[in-house]
Length: 393
Image (cartoon, rainbow, N blue to C red; front, side, top):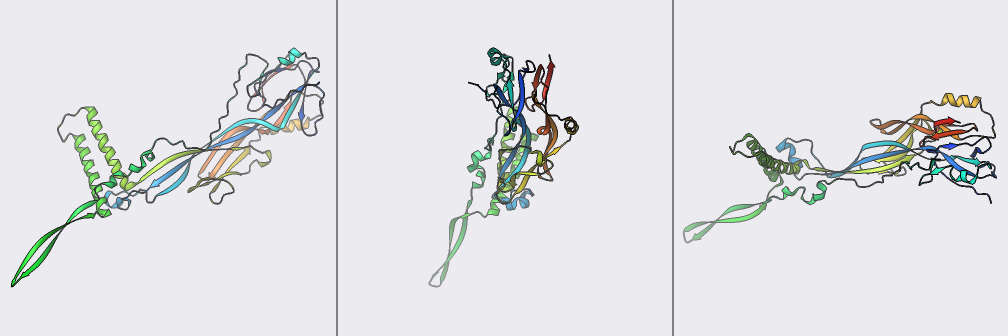
C-alpha cells in the first residue's frame, strides 16, 4: 500500500539534494490539484505574522487629605486633585514571526529509484516537525515563540502597604478645649461669682491639621539643614550621618503625601497579532481600542480611540514580478518552490502623537518562484522561505 508522509511545517534549515531529474518533483497543492500516485512529503512556505506587544500603565491616583491646602501652605500646584484610575500606553513593540501559509502548501514527489535507506535518511526534523536538513547531527535551533498574556507585572510599590500610606494623617486629631464658666450666686444682698473650668475634647479643623503638618515639614527641613551643616557640633561618622539624613527625608516624604497624594503604577502587557493581507496594503486596519479611563477595549465596545495597523509596500520585488510574468511558462516538473519576500513599513497608530513604526520583510507581499529540476543542494531561510544557499552538483 502506498505510504504518504504528511508533514505540515515551515521550510527552515533545509539541506536537501535532488538526486536526478526523475526522482524529485514538487508541485503546488490546492483544491484543483490532481492526486499523485507516488510517495512524497508535504511542506508549506511561511507567511509573516506581525505581533504587537502593548504595555499599559494602570495608574491609581489617591487624593491626599490636605490636598486643598497644598498651594496655601507649601506652594504646591501639581497635586492629585481627585481619587481616580487612569491608563496610559507606555510602550509598543512590533515583531514578526513565521507560520505555515495555508495557501502555499507543496508536495515533494519522491522518485521510485530512491531506496528505502535513502528515504529514511533524506531529511532531519525538529521536535515540532520542522525540517532541519539531511545531516543527522543537526540540532533543533528553532526559536520558541513565547506569547505574553495580559497580566499583572507590577513590582512592589506603596500599594503593598496601602493601609498605612496616609498614616501620619492619623496624628492627634483632637485637642482639649477649656471653657471658663462664671456662675453668679445671690445670698441675701450679696452676689458671689464662682468660676468653673469646663474641659472638652474637640476635633481639630482640617485646615488646622494641614497647617500643623506644613509646619512639621518645615521643621524637618530645618533639622536636615542643621544636621548637614554641623550645627550640633557633633562628630558623627559618615554612616550615622547618612542614616539620620535618610530617615528625615523619608519622614518628610510621608508628610508631603498628605498634600500631594500618591499615584500607584501597575504595568499590564497585552499581545495582539495581525496577518498582513496583500489586498489590504496601505490601509489602516483596526486591531483594538484604547480608553484613558478604561484601558484596552475590544473593537465592538463603545468609546475609546481605535488603534490601527498599516502595512505599506516598498515595491522592491516589482521588477522581479514583472520579469517572471513575461517569462511565465507551464512546466510539468518543478524543483523546490521558494519565496522572495518584500520589505514593508509597518505602522501601529493610536493618534498623531503616539505611533510605532518599523520596517520588516513580509513574505506574502513578495513573490514565489521555483528551482529547475536539477541536482541541487539548497538551504532556506527559516523566517521567509527564501533561498539562503545554493549549490549545483
